[in-house]
Length: 242
Image (cartoon, rainbow, N blue to C red; front, top):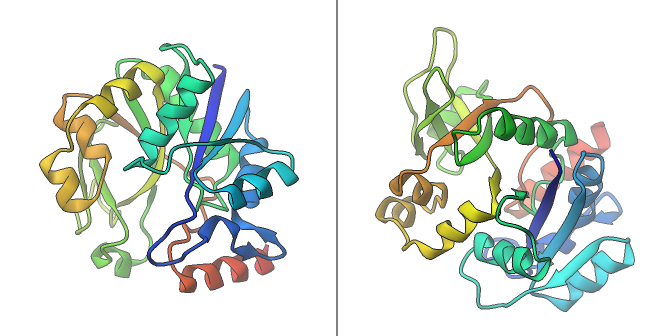
């Protein structure tokens, strides 16, 4: 299945300003994200930003980058702007890959799209990984997902969810999504859901509007998302250890 990866990348960040341009090793974080995405089977990769410094950096390492409005309230709105400017058809599949995921495996990205294709009855596909460290169960920054035997998401939470099966602590949700342009159009037209606002979890808007989300389990590398200066230090350590 041909698909397009769109990577939203804002300069403003309360906890780590200029995050996409922060160095991991000797290259910017956004370049790490793009490099990994480039190893997937995506037919096109577009970085969507609202900052000329990010734009210039992306162009310098050969990425396709588009300037988008600074008025967007979410990454989904930014992605929709790119879908329109690229004239993507409603039926085309888009992967929402966050610009602060420098270690996301290209194999995981392909697995996500394969899951979307093989579970056409689901409007959205996403991924998770098994939680090994019990301390993560009570960490609010780690989103936990509960799903049934068919992979249908039942809940997303910042607190611990019941285990799925014996011997499993739980599952950490990975903030990567595959959906059609048509579903994304509907998403941005819907009002923000009550639970979405309370927990700052956009995916709850899909569920509150009756869109089923398929959750796949991955064994591929995910690394860490970078939200803070501490995360950035950890990311540099991970790179050194590779």
